[in-house]
Length: 264
Image (cartoon, rainbow, N blue to C red; front, side, top):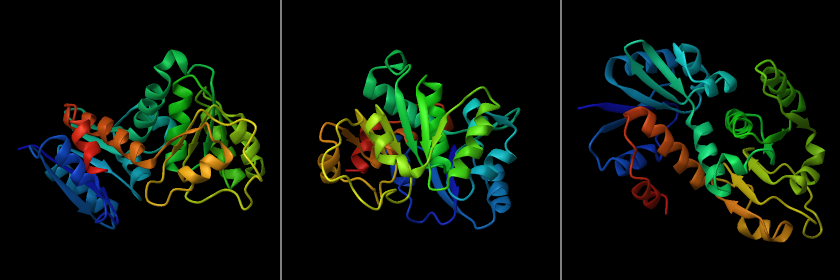
């Protein structure tokens, strides 16, 4: 039987095993490889598993160890899917493919994304994946992060790969929020200390919230500042990255409806 797993530390709380089991009706083994040391986790992967999902804090190390890297991984500098092949370990980033799937679903395909304004909040792994995904879909991307220098460093790196994004200071958050057509919020906490007194004159068509455990935006908060904005919750991000990632791992599309039922 083919075996798959999840590498990371700590991962006991992960929903990934339940999602994988539902997606494939239990036909494959999927196990947690919870190791503090990445080299140990890597050796276990090579010995026991055809492919693995990778989570914090190992995504950058997984990228560095892999031999064959997708274009998205090269741009992000991190991988969360590793697959053993006859030519070596291949690396992918399903955070990126998951965001692309959400954007295409919201707007009806790549043709309707081209040239639209997207604001990415946060310059961590999820923020970088979101930025690359939006850029690859043809969107105009701005990034805001608490640390301006970190966002600028990443912007300079992308520019070397013929991709470019605009970096804005955190103080411009609500101005940029109101001007964007799409906001992808990946920061771990609210970026603001004071909310606008009333609704913004304009707002994004959709807001994608990455954090499903402690989201910064609630439906109530969003209705106060941008009543017309559609909120896409973090559970949808988790689902779409899992659907696209598991397909890469197994070569078969999982049952996305069964996986969605796990998150309800």
